[in-house]
Image 1: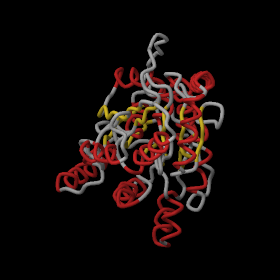
Image 2 (image 1 turned 120 degrees about the vertical axis):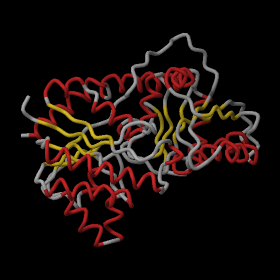
Image 3 (image 1 turned 180 degrees about the horizontal axis):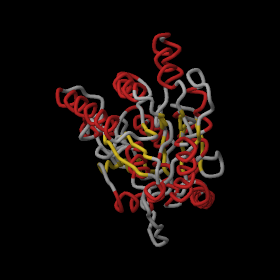
Length: 361
């Protein structure tokens, strides 16, 4: 066990798809068995509401993390640094400062991208494109999907490694669970996750004269509970839509199991772990064509793919699930099969180990 790896990652809290996967990586037994590992948690936010904000406390943390990184680089020099770098915005500039130190000490970096937007940033700014090319030069990158390679083609010389996410929680399916909700929306409450699109589509379904019940599960972030209730009431959905609030662990999966179909009309995403969570409970998903989602939601097989913000099509697909309960159930079964064949923790750990072995040589 000569190879030393430093994991420079953001860990929960707050709980996001990226932090959940980072925890899965750092706690993987297969990593500890094959490498000498050290973890440097570089989380800046204490909650989802704190994401994207600026404060003196965050600047103090940045300084502290730089000092900790320098101590590791000088006294416990690793062979490889696994870095979940933020790909865009000021967060990228912040993380690029860590890259400066690492390159100064001539240590190999394996970047793991849990976001996208690099292509768009390069098109807007030649300076940013130069910074990206410098940061990624002679380094290796993990992408979540082949569908996301296009986002980094302008700044990478070598092809990236592909490591698909997996379900991070081991939850069994309860066959006896009674279906209470026709539709469920599960995500942090931000406009980019499509909660307003979900409500707009439900409004169309209501105008069709169809009875249904829907539940919204999510942590208030950009949208608070009061604002969401106003949006629900303004669309005349108070009698058929309930906001449950943030729910985690077994209770979350119990609510999923009580639902017939998940609607995830996200406007900006790279993966969408909630889709795999739905599949674990044999719930099909109506989702946007966005990021790697088409690798999970196979149109007409495990759910339906829709164009972003196409509320008319979303409503039509929702109506279809109400009119075809048996076929909808079959979609959920196929989603569960896809999950168990392709997106297990065991598969994830095996692929992760191969990548780490290649990059640490």
